[in-house]
Length: 613
Ligand SMILES: [Zn+2]
Image 1 (cartoon, helix red, strand yellow):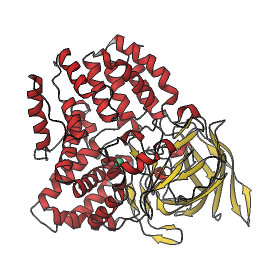
Image 2 (cartoon, protein in one colour):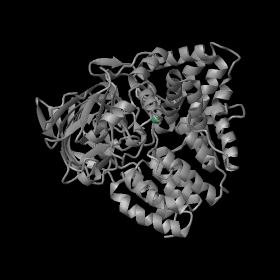
Image 3 (tube, rainbow, N blue to C red):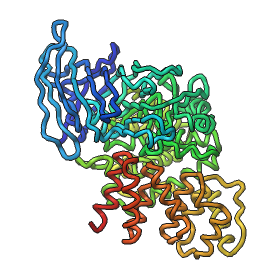
Image 4 (cartoon, rainbow, N blue to C red):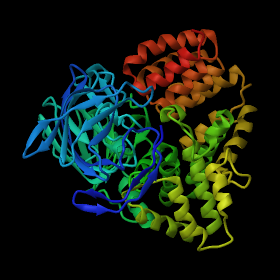
């Protein structure tokens, strides 16, 4: 399935954006060039007992062609009724729900006639909705109340809202969320900071966003302000720690505005998710969703906040038009993240983080199929979740580092700032970016970088010969110390941050002796480290080295954390030997109900489909 979308003029909340979107989105049935949906009103009841959302989605209809059908994406939804607003009242209208596609869900086609301005869908979600996770009270830290949250990116919004689920669309939304009255509902919207709980919350997102940025969470949430513009929403057990950990967020906003222009989303709040949140963070506008595993007690993992904040420019403001253009979101964001870290914490730390990212990229380049190392990747209809790698992130970032080095920072910063202005609140394809780059950077500075070189980066496999290969002096020092330590000397770790520890553990020689492993653990208590990243690196090594004293911690780690980046590599390492695989399956079965659907599907592939059963 493939289609060409050509939108000439989208009317959004009374203002006309002349957005020309040319994209081939192979992951949506929507036909935006015929009928699109610039505004959504949600009215949903949150039913924890049934693990269901139930209610209505009402769309403003915008016709771009002679068309009388609205096509939406759905997945696992039960559609009860569809209606049109005609002659001042709601009137039922026919719909058809196609057979399920393997990865894309079910196409919903609604007869909208030629004059109705609004369409309403009555529906409910399935308890198995891929974009929602429902946690029992026992699965939360407070143990008293249930918790529910969404993860819509890339194509899971359709599992909780019937929607034109393509990032080429931009829409505003209003929502009424009906909850049990002890709980608070928050969304990627104008969340109130008042402490009062209610049984219904009215929320609004006035800026046009792509569907994958519609987000909801409902739980026993407190709120604490960091500044007049930034607050943390969290369960009470972690709210003070999170507010302390992320105290630099207001400063991060300031330095980013100085580099790339105004923050255009009014407030920037942070929501701490339960440990089962499958990602590090999700850049839901106005309210980033964040894993508790980065509340490390030493502010050493705050680059994740820099990353989600950076998305307020790259991704949320200027958005990839389809998932094969993901590098437009993530490459720019990784670049901006690193610039924020440099501006606040200095070059040394930023360089360490860049070098760590580069090491991760090298690992992926070794294992990925060559065609999947292309930035403008050909996904076909493969699920974007199945093709997740460092390519759009770090290769994209290195491409921008390369341009910065070639044109100089002043020129490149000015270019980026203009780029964010030029495409603000629009979704763009890789081709549109290339045209803009040609006109506004390459042609203005002739003879510096050719379009062939740009094409090599964007459409070529692997890394170009002259790609930046970031290293870090700090890591060279760590490696020198490692040599001394392996010969029986002492480490000087008082100045070490999480990054140095990760580099140390990840680069220990695999023939390290059992005696030395035990010594390291005795001297630095790595098995019991509270830092989720350091513990991860150590536990992974403990599997490879069959270091049994870490086994019980490994078990409790896998049972208490569902962030996929931290658990999947451990299951993958365990799956390499029959004994470990058997043990891993037992742990997995115990952990499974606490994992997000995405974490479940990734790890079941590792433990069962790739295994010997
Ligand atoms: Zn990102």
